[in-house]
Image (cartoon, rainbow, N blue to C red; front, side):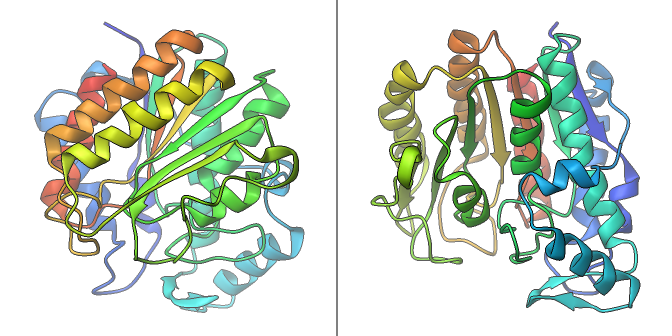
Length: 312
């Protein structure tokens, strides 16, 4: 059995988005219940939560953005930057825990104390820009972790695979001129946030290290998986990642209310095996996933469970 680290803590329920918001504490509560009922959580090694430091956040976010998030939460504001990004008094602290816990999990895998990992955290992160909260996201968890791997763990090249139904605009923009971070995204288009065209391939030194595979409304398993097998896998012969991160959103699921793709639960297991194959080939199996979207509770929990089974 592989040593899989798992961040799974009720502390993330304290990010209160208010009644009726799709990114609710019920998401993680349902995942915890299903992972425990299926005996999956007990097969993993629990990794305790830990906050991201200012230094870690400052690698990918501007200092005024960090202070603005913290000040808005302390002042009792209910939204920041857009009306879809709800906050509460504890949200800044919990967002630090989300980013920091993912980074800590990655450090354990990078040091070979664990083989792989899954961080089930909220708020999600991939929409957060260097200077802007948006799309339910305050700090960009996967970007903080990727930057920490480069700065603290002597990892030369990081692959980020994002299969959320929404394009991870923040992750792409933070790293689009960095040739050491390869960002792959498959996502529905047209859909929020309106970025992620196939022509967006990076800028400056980073040209070629961004790969977008837009999917059409109604697309299902075959186009979703073809992007991974036909576009991403061949590109890795040149990039040769030393660590693989997955922004694991499950809102491309056919049951999800916020998207119009038709991906099945089983396809997320297939996607996991494809990306794990890249990690096995180039990165000594080092792969860590973090939760992004997914808003139908049953589909979210089932997809997370099958994803974890494939990692195990």
